[in-house]
Image 1 (cartoon, rainbow, N blue to C red):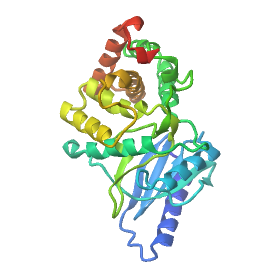
Image 2: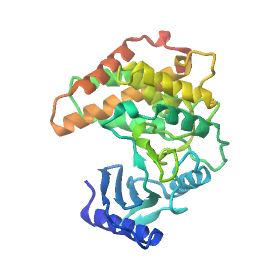
Image 3: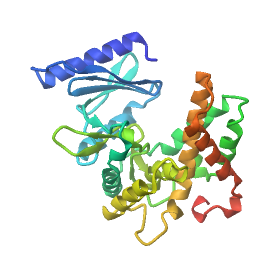
Length: 310
């Protein structure tokens, strides 16, 4: 949980910005949207304030904000060009957008997700763009799992991690050709801006990397049985129709999605096992599905893995 002084002042800053944007602000909706070690997000009316992770780099975050400002048709643009400093944390401000309803998964806008990713991946990459942080986040999740110690779910997840190529473990440069990537794509990174269509949010991992990584989490969900074939098909069809460069229309998508899907399965399993142990609870059905998927990944001999893993 975030320290009270930071949370209190973050809330006050959000209110100040909201009142600057709309002097007649109704102040009807405010509160904490998220409070995690890697970020705290609060809302006041039509304004959102985010305190980024304690180790966030100011220069890289500023470059990522510039990218979001430059591409408002894909990414929700920030309300300022650079982060502020608040109690030693970098803080950014954003317009509020309505999220995907977690209680209505059938209404998830998979076509919009696929189209937005394709547009992002087709965007010319400026020389100033930072590196996409997806593999680094996966490596950090696995490092956190190693600290759990003796738990029956730890070994299969680490065994699956060991089958991945070095680039997917953040131990080598990502393969070419590179593209501008989101780095942490899931449905929670999508909002509908007022008077606009869906936009991607959360620029913390935005940067240059392998575009297939952004398709890896939906692919992992599909492979684990957590995403229905119809929704998976809608997502892929929309990405291809919008000219997404990660996939050629004539090829098997798994030729390029195998490694990212396996890596993000391991990352998600590592996080969920770590959290379950920290909470002192047994693994639930979804947790077991992810760990079982890691067992299947680890059971495939390295020499039989797809060429894209090399």
